[in-house]
Length: 110
Image (tube, rainbow, N blue to C red; front, top):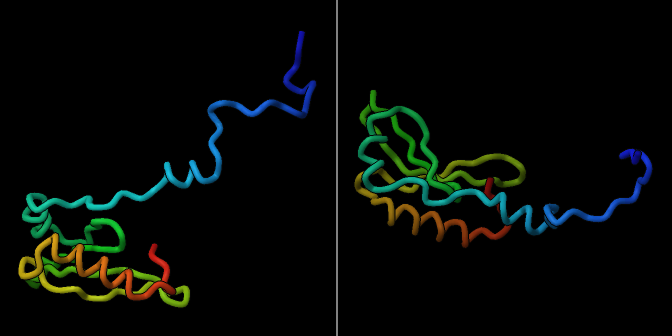
């Protein structure tokens, strides 16, 4: 009868992934929002994520919807306003967020 404690060395399993494969499998979803879902979300208070640091911040009590970009600078979370929804479309907000992310290579997104 063999025991699982007999050998400390074991052959690597085919299921095990390398670190790079694990990181790729755990990538964050981007472009979660759609133009259709935005109309519904504009009525629900909160901060709704699209991915890559882009959020739609909604305050229906004040009648405000705005695009904001979350980024990290010197270890602190910062928020940058991109524009008001629906004046700034989803595609335009994504383009502006991508441009802002490319301008500051030293900051780290979260």
